[in-house]
Length: 289
Ligand SMILES: [Cu+2]
Image (cartoon, rainbow, N blue to C red; front, side):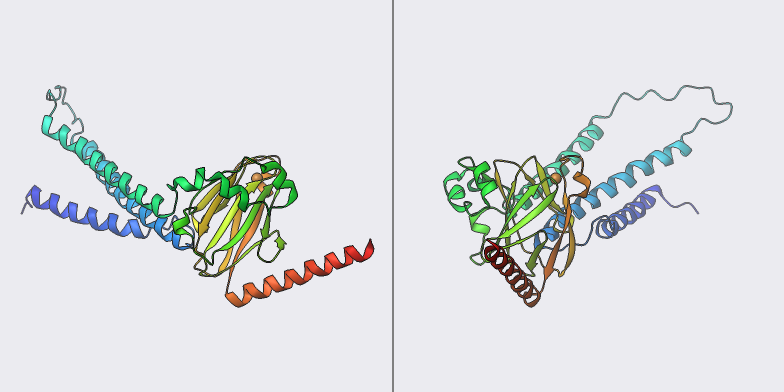
């Protein structure tokens, strides 16, 4: 019995659809998602993986089938049939990618906008940014004087909560320095409580660095003389690497630290410990003078 080819095509199409829908969710290419923003990014990534898997299997599948099915048989010295193109086919294979690209463009625009990336206020509102960032340490305040611009993801005022935890992040050769304006804590590690919005004001003291946490799916350049922002909601307790993602010098590869997403209690304890440690250090320094 011979199965009609349109039935075979239908079965292949269903199988292909199921495989790419499954693989789009189970590719395992992404690290753990530790923020609400990471989940949004993963949704579009998975969507693209689904489409890419379908296209890959379809094109490679047809190629492999053709290699065997239309190979030159022994003793066959004839030319292949002369085919002069196919207008409907060309319209279809132009229209399908055009539609896919259009959908992806709208979707990614939507995701970027949701994360605050398109906010014009974030990159042009110089006045308020200058006023806002004078609590940076002296070194930076001097560098940034009069020419600060905030840009970056999640910077939209509409996106920002009242109770957002603000941390000033300074990149320098070869370390990250985190200053908590509310409590005065200065640290080489970034500690944040889980499920509370965090706003990072990112700057650089010397050369261009980039603040990157793969588990947040967020990366932001740290540019001398400029102020950039990242706003996110960490929603998974854990320890995640903070990596400098811009070649910044000989020890660029060592410019790493850790983001600690902690429970409220753990975070408060850390703040208390560090406030106490810094106060006693300062007291000692004053006493010595
Ligand atoms: Cu760096």
